[in-house]
Length: 54
Image 1 (cartoon, rainbow, N blue to C red):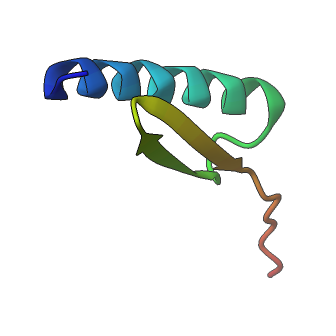
Image 2: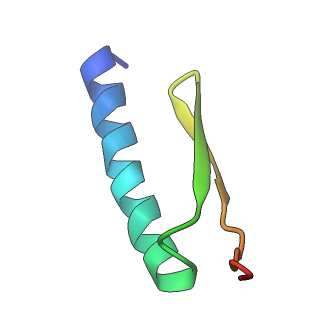
């Protein structure tokens, strides 16, 4: 897999992740990590509820 193909796959996954977070959680607070191992993408998504107390 070349650099451009890897970049395209990562960009597509980021789009998928943002769409998924919008459906299941809070679009304003989430984090994710992407690891590439031998051409496989490993994605860790963390969506934590956060509320401000005044």
